View 1 (cartoon, rainbow, N blue to C red):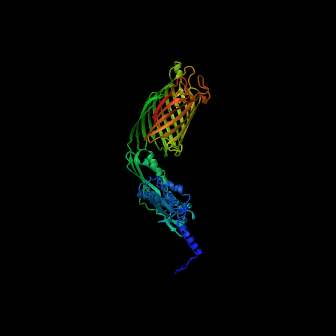
View 2 (cartoon, rainbow, N blue to C red):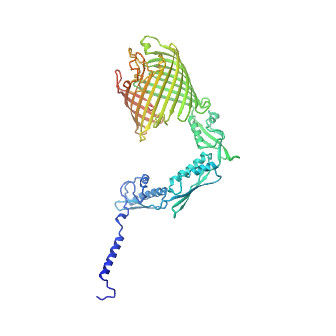
View 3 (cartoon, rainbow, N blue to C red):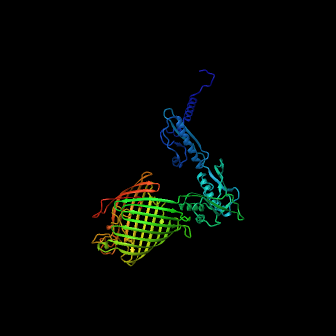
Length: 616
């Protein structure tokens, strides 16, 4: 066949066919390299191409999205996800990442984000630059040591930079530079080397010491009382910790509705380079008088109401005068207490009290009066101790005397007390985590119809812990006590068990020694109690409790007692029940119903208790 062109042979045609096949294959993407298709369902927008190890923390930052109904909605969801990815990757040191949100579809709409992370940047170096006068040499050395987490060659993540910047300012202020601050960190990136140079720019300001205290807004409060609360010495370096402690002390007085504490502006440095800064205190005093009412009820202890009137800041030194009274089924009481804080030092408190009382219990009847003085001191933020003395007179008719047809005993009593208490919980009325413990020793002497000396020792501890979920709290409590000395101890100093503050499910004082002949309660010389509760707070206002209590009072070695002289677990009363808690601004209201598990003749099937605060 004639032609103006060149004729291909068989081998030529084979080469052309092979070339066309190769071009076709190269023009098709490999199956493993297909472009991500995204997701059209509800949930997190899918992200493709994130470096290994970062998927889980990225997912924690993403929001759950509904299934998109339009292409516009799908695109907006992808863009929101892309913003999160971009910020996250930069915080992890990927400063050249390429982020591409995409959305597609006509009837069903999918969306996603493609990521090309790029190189991981590292720190090349870091330094501190001071704007204005540099701090003293020791502080500079301490600041330099804070740069260690940002070591050269480490991934250039944002978190260490932020934390280090905050730590530098905090350290400056703790060193006595109250106006210290920082400008934004200067970061110089080298894209070719994949590295970043950091410069922390600090503005130390003047070093300062505490000057005078100036107070405005006082009415009844004396200014020297405010001055006595200062935790620093004159001329001491200004630190945020000292100012915060001063603010806390002002709040703890309970005298002020508002308080504001700041340093005076405009101070100039002295010859030593330190500026004396006066402390400006602005307060608004609270109403000085308050009235409080309360009530309690139980099927074993009876019903009671109490009232309190208090006058705060009686002399302008943060002191208070309190009148309180109680009228209940089993007791009547009237008490006056004067409380004077900060005797000689901060946290040392003097309580002076006078009281008249009248008891009518199954174990004894008592009418009397007493006066007492207690000196209490806060030894640490969680530990306080007290020493006290009390003198009183009482007319006591116990059940043994009543059974014998005898009249009441008239006793004069002088006793002392030493108490140590550890409070490791935030809210005393509704503790969630922590420990509370208390131990007390009370030596005493009586004369009149009975002349003896005795010592009463008691201890109590409670443990609270959150069981992983913030709404579930487990709590346990233990209490024990003993009395050393001869028989004849006043009945109100003996131990009794049973009732709302002891072993629920039993009548008040019913788990106590009894006279073997008359079956009347006589009180015990030792005590053991234990309780466990599981508390569930279902909402802001409602909670539920399951509990079990055990305990008894004993009289080891006493005659005429139906109880074994030794503490025998088989003799303990055990009660269990359920409770309801209604949470208010001032604490939970408590309602419990309990049944005796080791029921004896005469025990009721159940007992009901209503009060304020948790059981312990």
